[in-house]
Length: 195
Image (cartoon, rainbow, N blue to C red; front, top):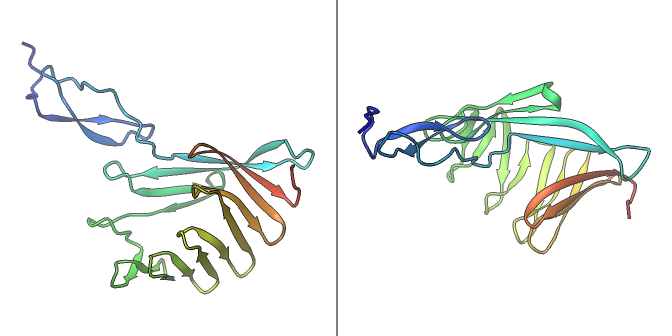
């Protein structure tokens, strides 16, 4: 019998997924992990396309966002926006609360994050963020609009609850394409109806 210094039933830490977070994996009698690494499905990046002005069927990359997670609980720890020109980071306490939360209500909802106040409806949906951002929700708990001091967006959903359109008061809008429940494309149009 080959001795690996690990008893059956012990655990080793194995890397899984592109960001290589670590989770326990049962060992076989030889101390080898019987299962291959598994991708846990964490979203590591988003690529946003923009419509080329020459054709409604032509798109190019607008910007890329990158996301980072902690290695033990998969909490989002950083996000890099606009091709890395802006990065936001978060840390968490032992209970899993963000460290930048300075006030919570009696339902443990953050009422102040990074100095910006928030309010919620009875179901926990965010109603306001600061003094210039507000949100409305439909009877199925889907966001129906969002507004800032300079813009308002309205949202349309298909019967299964997946968002299909995001419409801006300027006439710009985004259409979302799915393969079943899996989002596959997001199209941005600037006042041009493609069909």
